[in-house]
Length: 213
Ligand SMILES: Nc1ncnc2c1ncn2[C@@H]1O[C@H](COP(=O)(O)OP(=O)(O)O)[C@@H](O)[C@H]1O
Ligand SMILES: [Mg+2]
Image (cartoon, rainbow, N blue to C red):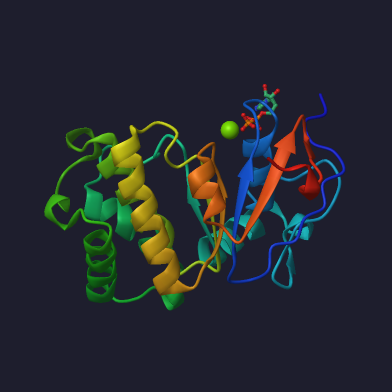
C-alpha cells in the first residue's frame, strides 16, 4: 500500500514547523521517515548535510543518537527505569569517547527535568507518574543529547487540555533554550499557529499552503 507520495518540504535549521492533518493521512509515517527511523521506498531525506536515506540501518541509528530527538504520542518511557534514568539513557548509550562523565550525565538530566517541572519525581517509575508527567520526562529525554532536530508526534494527543498545555510549555521552553529545529505533528491548531510554518496534510500528500483555513 502506498501511504505517502510526492512530498517535498524543507524546514530551515533552527525554525519550528507544525504538521496537521486527519487521522490516517500518513503523518506518523512521514515523521518516522524524516527522523530516519524507517527508510522510504523511494526519495531522499536530508538532515543538515547528511542524506539519511543513504545510510545503513546501523549508521542511521548512530546518526539519530547524535542528532535527532523524538517525542512519541504514547510517551514510550522504559517502565523499569526511573524518570532520571530514562532521561540519562540516551547519553549512557553513546560510544564511550562521546559519552559525558557520569556526573555530567546526572546533572544534565536533572537540569532538564527541572526545566519541565518534574524535578520532584526523579526517582519515580513511569507507572507512578501521571500521563502529563510521563510526557514531560519524555520531552526532557528527547533533548538530553542536544539534538539538532526534534520530532514530536502528537505530543499532547493522549493528554487532557491542562496536562497537554504543560507539556507544550516544557517543549517550547527547552526548544528556545537549546535552539533546536522542532517539527510537531498536532491536531491542536493553537499550538500549530505558534510554529514558524504549518504544513497541512491530507491522504498522504501535502495540501497547498494557500488552501489554509
Ligand atoms: N505498520 C503499518 N503497516 C501497514 N499500514 C500502516 C502501518 N502504519 C500505518 N499504516 C497505514 O498507513 C496510513 C497512514 O498511517 P499513519 O502514518 O499512522 O497516519 P497518521 O499518523 O496521520 O494517523 C494509514 O492508512 C495506516 O493504516
Ligand atoms: Mg499518527
